Length: 310
Image (cartoon, rainbow, N blue to C red; front, top):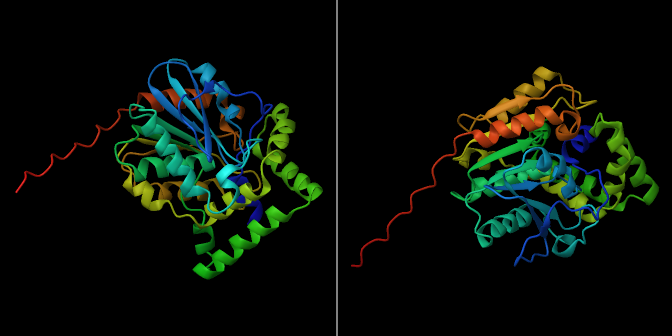
C-alpha cells in the first residue's frame, strides 16, 4: 500500500534547480509559491506535483507555443526555500495562493493544468472559485486517495493514524534511508532512463518536512466535492502504475468512479508510460494538451445584479 501511495503522490522533476521556465511574475510575492511566466497568448497555469520542479513543463511549453504559461513552484519543493510551508497544512494554503495569484495577475479565466499533487491543486482552485478557471487538466492523480483505505474498512481515526505514521517516517528518514527510498521510487516514475538521475536529485533537494506534509494532506484530503463543484471542461490523463496491485480494469474503474460527478469529463488512460506522461509519451501528451485547449470552455457565471435599495 505504501509503495502504491508513493507512486501516486510523488511528482518530481528532471533538470537543475536553477533552470526556470520563464521570468518571475511581476508584482507578486508569496511565502508559499513562486511563479514564472513564459510566452504570449491565452493564459495557462501549470502546476507541478509533490517535490517537483517547474521545469517538468518545459518540453510542453516549447512544443505548444501560442499561450502565456504561468508556472508554479511550490515553496519547499525542489530547492525552493520552504517559507510559510515549513509548518502546518500544505494542500489548502497553496491552493489559496494559486487562486490569489490568478486574481492579482488579472488572468483571463486561465486553463489550469496539474501533474500529480498539482492535479489536486488544479481541482481545488477551479472547484472552490467559480468563474476563476476556464478548464482543468489533471495528469495522473485521483481526487481521493483515502478511498483505498476505505475499501479496507478503516475508520477516520485509523486513517489519521496511518497518515501520521507515514508523515513521521518520511520526515525523520536519515539521508541514506531517504536516498534509498527515493531512488526506488525514481525507477517507477518514468520509463525514460535519461531522466532518472536528475529526478532523484530534485527529490533530495526538497524539504523533507514539506514533502511529508504533502503526503499526509493527500492521503486525508477528499476532493470529490471539488470535482462535483466543477462547472468547466475537465480532462484527466492517467497511467497504469508500475508495481500497483491493481489490474488496468481496476484502475480504469477507480478513475471513472472518481470523476463521474463532472459531467462530460474526458477520462483517459495513456498506455506504455510511467507517472511522467509528458516525459515517456511526449507526443501523446502534447496532442492531448492541444485537444484539451480546444475544448469549449463554459461561459463565466453571470454576475448577479445588486438588490435594489429598500
